[in-house]
Length: 408
Image 1: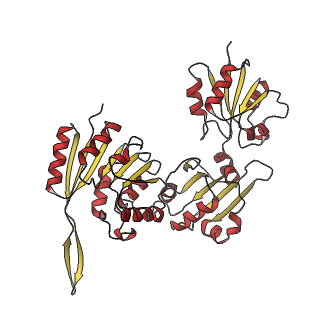
Image 2: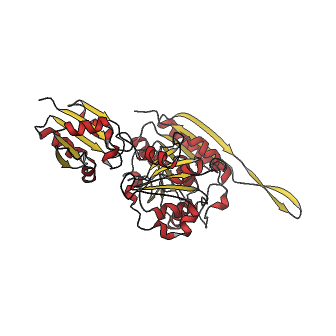
């Protein structure tokens, strides 16, 4: 028996917004599979069986067992816009021919309703994700956000980040009879807290317009006084800037900061890899307290703090693309072995102070056959005024060593 499998985007939920192609597919179907909410989006004269589920494995099981030949799977919005289509196709395509039909997405609908062009928007989803969306807003004039969590939290974080003047265009229950679109500045919404209550964020999306985007200074080398420091050691801004350049982080990187201390490097890594995740590993209680405070202060939602000592604390973490080692507590080789086991091609950067540490590191580079070795020494000095004279005061010299695993 040859089964016809079609995955369709049904739009936001109003049956009037179904494309003609999708409407015909639904009317011709013998079996329709989708989440409970999507049943209300079907054409009124649709007579197919309907099975309520959005779990990929369950959908595969249903298709395998059914005798129906014409099967349609419903996805909300557009089938290719943050839907389960990609994962579902990978499950089905080995046994079945899968046809995909587009629907109207929430971004195109809200853009049309509010007169906003979206071809230059940065698109971020917070559904089950922890992305550093504040960094996206800071660097893009337009950010489209699929909300997760409360609208109040989003507005509060924007205001904490100094983005009170950003304009928000919030689409609530788009396409439904009770559809609402609210336009206001973040600061105004926060001051008028009543507007933030009772909003169904599961069915809400928003544009954030930041006319000041791109005018802020680059993230590398954030001023030291922006961090909560306490008594824990902190990588100085001059060294941090060069360290970040050596890390070469991609925006979706999985990265470790081992021996994170106050989190100054972690925070900058989280801003650079804003679509990825940075795992800050630290064991000192005093440093951890500062690390949590700096994560909150910089709203680095994609920064995961791991309490413990490396390499043991690394065991349950996902394989990294990039690793920064700021402190090893005498376990440099064990840490190196652990990260290379997780990813033999991992990119590694170490900051070292003593000649003995540099000598040990070079021996490990040779022993593990590491490649693309770069060594830089930073010996920065800062000027300060004493009795009307400006004198240069040297900071501790630091060796910055970067290298790559040789691969499997």
